[in-house]
Image (tube, rainbow, N blue to C red; front, side, top):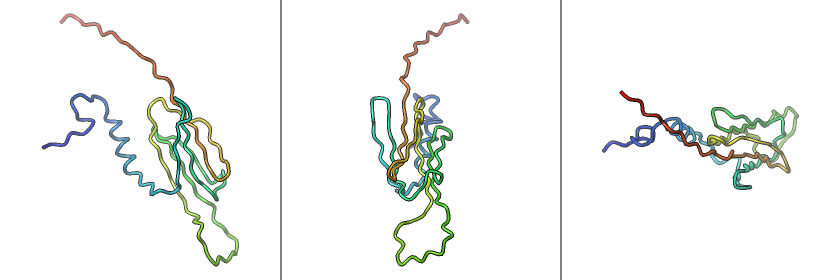
Length: 137
């Protein structure tokens, strides 16, 4: 039996881009660091919160690339001559990505108590009815 992909299903025309987004999201390999929450703050808004303790604002970047929200963190190298007896706080870089639906826009980003909050809003979809004229052959 042949497996049908979303883009090749006969009733799903033009969904190839959605299929590519799903594949890219599955391959992102975020590995659970840093931990995050996603909450719905109203009917049309969301908030993503990442635990980024130890990162300064200038060590974080937030970008939107091809409908994908990407948060990157890279701590600056510590050039001091500190001697650690135990180092349990990792100073590692990370990248977290979230696929955004059409109509979802990234709003404000706020850093507070080691948590990075990113607000998202979804525009209200308009109902569009289009009448197609049938031409005589």
